[in-house]
Length: 443
Image 1: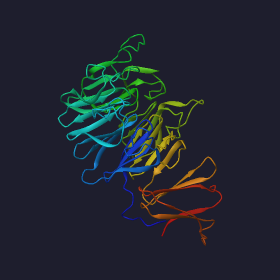
Image 2 (image 1 turned 180 degrees about the horizontal axis):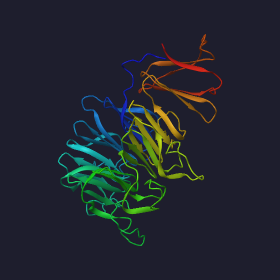
Image 3 (image 1 turned 90 degrees about the horizontal axis):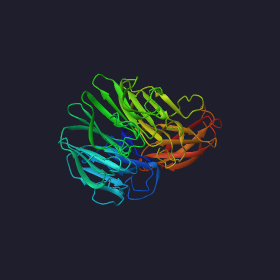
Image 4 (image 1 turned 180 degrees about the vertical axis):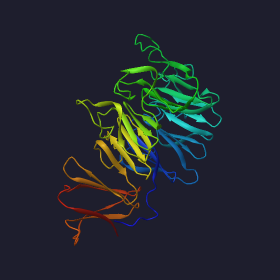
């Protein structure tokens, strides 16, 4: 095994999943992306998809502090409080005064932004003074008293907001007094305001075009999926409302296909939650990862499916501990562990898992390992794919030996690590063909 070098890859610290693109931050404050880029949402100056992590921006003095992936657009914050965006802007969701798509990061707000949230076609951000702002599609996600889209930031609430979250077409925010507010689309009851799910009501799809209070106090954290909302209270209880058609709420099917009022969920000790298209991910306080909902594309990752269905309605555990971050995409999932490794499962048709392939996975695939660790993944062809994180630009050779004592290493091929330090050897012989493989640096 190679000796670890100080110039090796930095650990992954934050992750986000859009509709079919992924972004993550490393501990040096740099921004990376992979997957769908047809709208420029990766911000690399092209409209080309990539199935390997690609460096978008370096860290440094103005390091990236937070990142959010929307439908086909992306937002990020720099450490100086400036807000930046790239990608699809057809609804004005980038807030730059135009509806032009851009494939490079563009500054939207110069300072004082402290939090961001992205829906499919709209964006929310929070300033240091507690004011809430929005831009983009307002057809269903109305928040300013109208249903008119806007391509510039629009003030929604002047003060006292401390946290924000965005679903596909709805938004949530938390005020200083612990009250929970919601606005926008309510087609599955995701606002939790008790309004009957009546398709004959002309306002049914719209929901509300101005913020309404849902819970008066004691709310401590909020999160949103496509058509679902979650929150935690001071007493540690965990609540959800909205779409439950695929078991997204994880309540055992007690409210199907959805609930229009907050429902206390049986499981607790939730540290973090992320809602995807039709599935949800949860991290408990012990660092374990739990999943529920639709699994048609494998986005739940190796869960036990009963009676041939494609969903589960009660959370199942898929990782024991050390999970520190989660992100639910439309039909795929990402999670990062405390060792800085990045994992994914589900749809990979755009390369959004970043493992060098377009092969979907119904089990957790280690995308980026701890430095100097080899990842082995079986292929449907019967061969293997070996991936490795080393030093950017260095050449690495793959050797195979049938025995170790004495070893008879036979060189197979040589590849160069990309700008991230990652490389892949694909279509290797079947696992039972050779007993031992090694990767070594070469001139």
